[in-house]
Image (cartoon, rainbow, N blue to C red; front, side):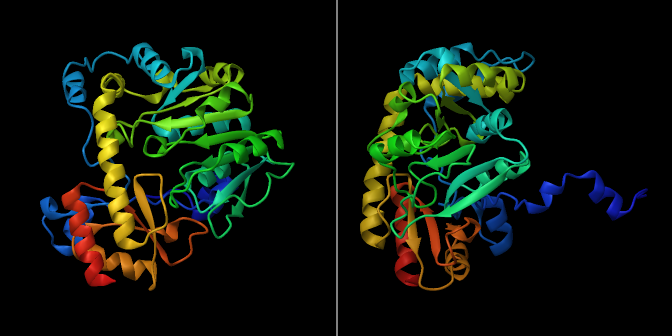
Length: 355
């Protein structure tokens, strides 16, 4: 039995929630199987930018040895990230996925009346974090080459940059990032979730700029999307405050700690899968005429409406991503994750039929 009216419930909620657009995730095996009557084992999933080769075999061994009745002890994981990045442990911050890291960071810096700078199209969660903090996002359209157009306005409190950018796949140059950092008082969060697939990283700039945070994840190149483990390298003054505001045990589990630690101990495995993905990316890009990409996905222009375009692939059991949910992407773009050679062959066969 409901005891209160809709108006009563709405009055209890924060007004900013009315501006929120829910995050749209890529479609899964179960959904497509039920919708089209296709056996799950025959579906090719190229819509969520996962590593199709999965994590190092050492990860399963490590997870099998956890004690789930115990709270996580992340010290060894943090040490592994420090060794991988070359930065001291006191500059490493971790969370439940990169979204967990960003959630804590926005609680450090954003409040009602603040503004954030978000070049679009890009990862939509930056906008969600801004609004839930009570701040206002400035959504700045990119130029025709997906580059950031102009400087960060003077009244911006926090800026979100993504390189390689999701969904377009292009990277930001070092000189451009330095210019932006030197022309703003804002905290700049540089999202490098896909950087292992790219030619370069700008992680080293954290040593030079005390308003720069570089975020990373083990979801993509390391194949741990299901473990939800993100991290960032931040100036010491920010990292110190982060540890004060972060949830207990950084919101991660024993399984996450074990998986992340094991994956970081087998870098050769990760690098082999990255090279295979980069090789297949080149093949797919040449075959489709997609925009150049330095991530593990391609950004395609579609002649017809992207909803209709993606639907044709879904009906064939091939999951790709309709980019209409990315603000600024318009209605004629789709994103395709680079899969295994056989998965990519399935996609290309459908691509030839459809296009």
